[in-house]
Structure formats: structure tokens, C-alpha cells
Image 1 (tube, rainbow, N blue to C red):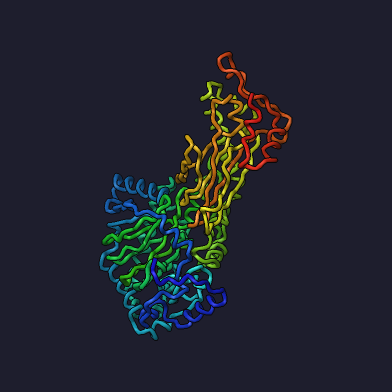
Image 2 (cartoon, rainbow, N blue to C red):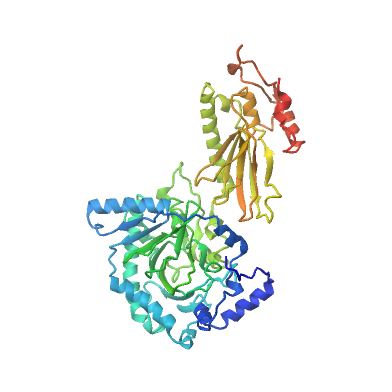
Length: 560
């Protein structure tokens, strides 16, 4: 962290005043650099929790998939390409393409056009400076300047190409007019080619996504990232996912700043000569019913520069039909694969995205089918599957524990652990064992806080992407006559970020509180007598509820 970082807080009114003063220059971040700025202004300094969290990320050598499109016209080659696109879209949400049909001269011309626009006299650029999103051509710095926690260290020239509508080429800045028109023509062709591959990757006809009008209009953003005097304090563009269907990104060579969040780590996307970065947008994740993944990404700042990127967003027919509705594709739905997203009205969805800063929340989450109900349904199925495995592990019939009503009722507890200024002094959740039969726990990624007491040592249970933690409860230890172990665990706190966990407790039919549980008869014999007394379910749960977690083990009360 830079030594001259000013941690002093400033109130919201002062921040708004500083944001307005910056915005009213109409000169963007480059204007600050041209003025001789040597220190990052407060409005660009990232919050302390973000800066601290950076220390937890490890450098990784993983590479984003690179897909060669040169054999796309051959049956064997196309089959290979479709499979590679499928895997990348399902696991990364990102991939690079080479031999895509757009010449190096067109790519270089587009980068050079953005550079020329930003290098010209500031008074010429000011003609295009606006925050009116309806303007076809607009120049600005941080579209979410007044809604995000941190201003982005970049300037953007945005140009809309509304599909079949006639183009008045004189609206475009002369400095990049020809290069932008040429690039726009080629990138639209590539967009439709990619939609064909993505359609086939979903098992649909090649023209399915194209016929849904994903590429009926597009918008090109030319991002200019000036050199930053304190790159560890500022961010080029905050962590976000793209709201549209598909994004094609061109990077200037020499500076690696684009990163994608993969398996809890930031992975660099190195510029590939002649290559383009492709990423899935939120709306494509929605219509694919979650098969394809819209992943979060960002651009870090750098002490060398400038860096230039050109982003083409395919967000559907906004120019003609804001009321168009999109939802999960019917051909992808079944009884085993029900819709996980609600239908969205295109204009309403993008307005919701624009109304919040990039770093606040994902607009896509708003359209999930009730997440708690959906999760509850799936976790109940998993609970019964696990009880079947546990029954067999005890040498019993598969449905034995299920028939004991161990999973007849469950309760979800969502735990939110805020950042703690002094984590050595506080605890997220005291040492305890779970009172029920079985617990399934979901952890947010990135922060390691759950610990289990094993052989008198606290052992970290690190979050595994896509994984769930399963632990035996006291009642399962009791009915197994001690064969299964209900172990002590806890949650510590952290000073680097908030953590979320969702615990599902299977504690039996609590509404039938008079039910009695004891060691399973099939597990009792002369050499293995019962070590626990029978318990009345309601009485047992009441005993647990009337004492603190950190006092005593309620199970001990029922030992023979």
C-alpha cells in the first residue's frame, strides 16, 4: 500500500462535491494527468476493506482458454470448436478467440482511433462529454461516477450502432470515425458467428440465439486508462459482470490489466496478438437458465500507460423494443431442470443495472426464482441422498435413516459475518456441535473462517468452489450409538471482508415433539451395548436452546 494513502474519512456531502467538481471539468482522468497530478484524488481511492482483501489473493498461472476458429467451416473443426466454447462458457464465462476473421489492420486501426480521440485537444473532446445515456455518441469518465463506492481510473468514448437504423457518420468524432465504422462492421459479423457456436453448445439450432435478436444492435466503448501514479489505490474498472448477452473485447498490447474472477482468484487475461476476449453476459446466463456463466471481472490500473480496450456489447434490440421480454429458453427446461430465473423486460432490466454502481450488486440476482425456496428444494433432496449413504455406511438399508424421519423437516440459517476491526478479540460463532441429525453448510468464497476441532487442533475448512460442507449432528451420533461423531466447530471473524454462510439443519419432525429417538436396535448387541439413553425430541431441543453454545454438550446429558 502506498505510504501517502490518506485514510482520513470524509463525509458524503464532501464526496459529492468532489465528484461534481471532477465531472464538471469535462476532461476526464486524462485531464487530471495532463494537469501534472502526482497523487490519486480521494474519489478514486478504493475502500480500505477492498485494499485489505487484495492481500488475500494469490498469483495464479491459470490461463483463460484460447480457441482457434480457423477450422470453423469444417465439420470436425466446428465440432471441436463448439465443445471448447461450451466448456469455456460453462466454467469460465470467458475465452479468447484467434483466427476469427478480423484482420490485424482493422484491430490496430480501432485501437489507434481511440488513442487519437483521447490525445486530441481537450476542447474537442468536451463537445462529446455527457451523462445522457440516450446520446448515440458520448464521452465520460465512469458511467456510475455518482453511485459506485469508487470512481474508476478511466475515460470512455461510447458509440451506439442501433441495428438497421441508418447511420449518420458525421455524429462520430472525426478522429476515430473511419476506424470505428470499419471495426463495427466486422465485429457484428463475428458476434453472429459466436452466437451460432453458442447455440450449438446449448444443443440448439445454429440460428436460435441470433433469431432472439441478441445482435440486432450493439454499442462500442473505447476505454482509455491513463498511467496511474498510485496504481495500488485506484481501479481501472470495478468488479462487475456485463449486463447484456455477449461481449467482445479488444485489448492494446503490452499492458496486462484485465482480470477475471475464477475459483476465488483473480486471473490475468494476457493480451494475445490478434486475439479477442469473449465473455458471457448476464442476459445470456439468464436465457441459458444458468448453463452459461456470466463471470465477474475488472481492470486494474497501472503505473505505465496508457492502456486501451475496445468493448462491443450486444444487448439486444434496445433501439426498437425496450419492452421485449426474455426468459429461460423453453427447449432447455424440463422437470429436472426447472427455470431458475424469471422473465425480464429488457429495458427495465438495463435500467436497473444503470441505477446502481458496478460494485454494489448484480442486477441478475434480482430476477432469480425465489432463491431460498429453490435452494431449500435442492438441499432437501441432497439431504435424503446423504442419509441413504450414511445408512449404508452403518450397514443398514438405504432408506433406514430417512424412514426415521431424520429429514422430515429442515431449517435454513443464513449467517452474515461483517468485517471485524479487531478479529483477535471477537468470534463469529462459538465452539459448538450441532444438535440435530445432519447439517449441510454453504460458504461464500474468498474468506476462510470455518474451523473444526480435530485431534485437539483447529483445522480450517476452506471454501471449495461449488462445494458444500456436511457434518454429523448430535442426534445422529446418538442413534448411531457413537459410531458417527458430532464434532465441535466454530467460525472466526476477519478484517478483510464480510462472509456469508447458509446452514441447513435436519433435526427431525420438530412439530412432533414427543417423538423418541435412541440408539438404532440393529446396531446394538452384546459387544456393543447402548451408550446413550432414549431422548424425547422436543425435550432434547429445548435443553439445547436453554444453554449457550459454549457451555456444555447437551448430548452428554443422555449418556448411559
